[in-house]
Length: 156
Image (tube, rainbow, N blue to C red; front, side, top):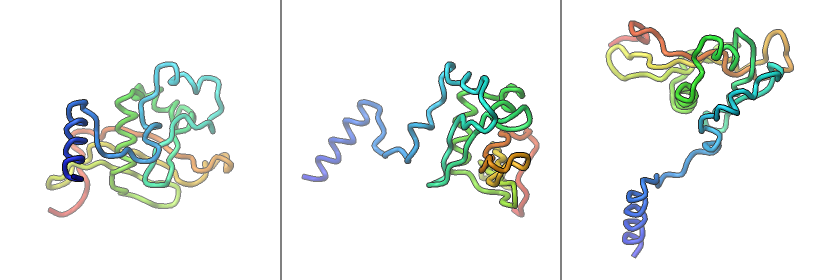
């Protein structure tokens, strides 16, 4: 009977195009911000958290920031969009950590080939912001798609 119930649930989910796998904790926050919400950093201090991303239980904030880091930096560079938001979320959630030194943690999403190709990169600071130690963690500094010629280092 359990097999039939599971089969029926799967069939119903397929008919509705609904996933059967439960979303990770905080997934409701992973949806792209609306246009109205995108303006939420206007007039806000740099320490304000605009968006939260997760890697397991660890939260990585995207703060309003300045023109050199955070949300305002991504907007100033013309990068911010719902698509970029999804790429940042995916890269932090399931990418590799290619650098984890004091004041810098780099998450990368790779295409497995020889040598591996970096598809997307998110640079974060898991420590306090140097100029204002009360801002801890600083969070996302920048995020981008590396140039087409860039590959991760490593033997094949």
